[in-house]
Length: 329
Image (cartoon, rainbow, N blue to C red):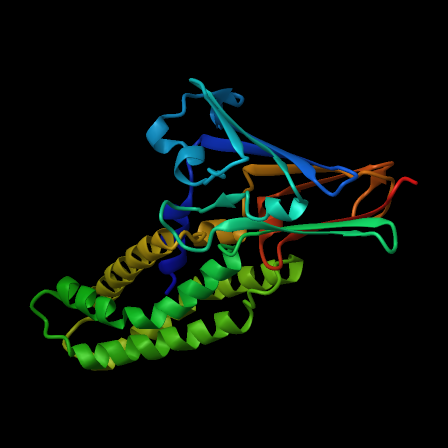
C-alpha cells in the first residue's frame, strides 16, 4: 500500500493560491437578557508566491457563496459586499435572547456535503443569584480524524475495484477475481483495524495527531506493498514479479483515486491535510455582558471577554466559550 498515501497527499496538496477567511463575532448581552449579535466574514484570496498579493475571487469559486449558509429569517439582516479581490458578509440581529443565536454559523467543506460545522449557544439569566451565564461552542464534525476513519472503513470495501484494476493491468492474464479480492480484503482489513483503533473521533489533540501520523506512516510503508505483492504472487503463478508489481501499483492508484473522490464527496479532509492541517480560517469572538465578568475560560476585562481560535480548534469536542457575569445592582 506504499503508493496509496503519496498519491492521496499529492491530490490533496494545494497550489500557491490560498483563501484566508476571518470570522469576527461580537455578542452584546443586555440587562434584560436580550442581545445584539454581529458577525463579519472577510474573505481574501492571495498568491503566496507573490508576497500574499490578492487575486480575484470568481463567484463560482467563492467559499462564502458555496460553503456557508447565513440566517435568512427575521430579524437577521445580511449585508453582502463582494468586490474584485475580497468578499465581506455582515450578519447582524437584535434578538430576544442569546439562545436565539443558536446555529447562526454554518459551513461545509464541499457543496452538498453532510456534517456541517456549526455553533450552539446556551444562556441563562438567574435572578436568584443575580448572574448571567453564557456558553457557546463551535464544532466541525469533518475533522481529520473523521476523514482518517472514513478512509480506513472504505479501504477493505475497495476489493472489487482493486481486482478489476489488476485484471485490466494484466490484460490477457487470467485473474481469479474472488481470490484476489480476498487477499486484498484481508490485507486492507488488518490495516483498517489498526487505524480505527487509534482514531477516536471524540478528541483531537496532540496525542491524536501523533497517533494519526504514525498510522499514516505505517499505511505508506513499503513493507505493506511488499507483503501484498508476496500474497498475490501464488495466486498468479504465470505472472513475473516485475509485471505483477507494476499491475499492483496501477491497481492501488485506481483505489486511491476512488477513495479521494469519496472523501471529497463527503466533505472530509484528505490525507495530505491529516498530517499538516493548514488553517486558513481564523475566529475572533467577543462577548460583552451586562455586568462584570466573574468567571470565564479566557482572559476577561470588566464586562468583556474575547476568544481567538482557528479552524482546527473546532475538531473533536469543538471549541467552547463560557462566561459568568454578575448583575449590576
